[in-house]
Length: 276
Image (tube, rainbow, N blue to C red; front, side):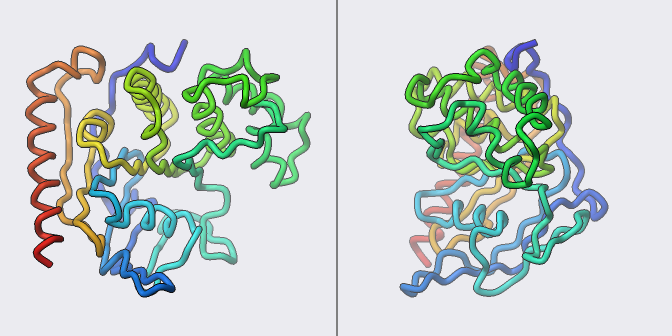
């Protein structure tokens, strides 16, 4: 079964204390040049959710994602992991996968070697990792390209390798920072469908950064709209579709109306930031 063959979505997860994966509380971030990127941002993420962080460029979406990933600390506020074992860095060991805007693949390594990297860092032997790597490549439709090099792949295929590398450790939380922004529309729509199916099949919790109203409305079961810098949550929009998310849904009245509603929220968030 390919990723695109199953597109039905689970109902949105009900956020409860027992289901919380990560909780940001009053997080602010000031960079060394004095830029206030985030101000008093709070966000609860529950198990099984697909959350899109939507906002204008420069509003702190990627900054928030990197703080959650432990790639930078908050200036103030806290990030808590209620249901995970925490390591010495204050992070859930092995529970986070990160997909960057650029695939960031090692050009001298094959597809297999690139996906093996996070397991190698965990001192898992290549032989012990082989089955898991091949299973993960099959999940993203690249099992036949294990011996290929990044230069031999299309942009969409390179991004699939990046997704496989993030998934091979079987994380509880998958963080995706505008991974499809540089791709053509056809490839982007196909990968949107694939990510939705992967989410449904694996049960992984996803936080997806985007500045596209249409992408957020198609992918998510919850959209968090952020105001312009300094970033903070402006609106929290839960979604529940009555139909499958597929090509027919993209041209449906329900999707059109949802995009209109989300566009209005984003417009309000931008103008609130301008007035501030």
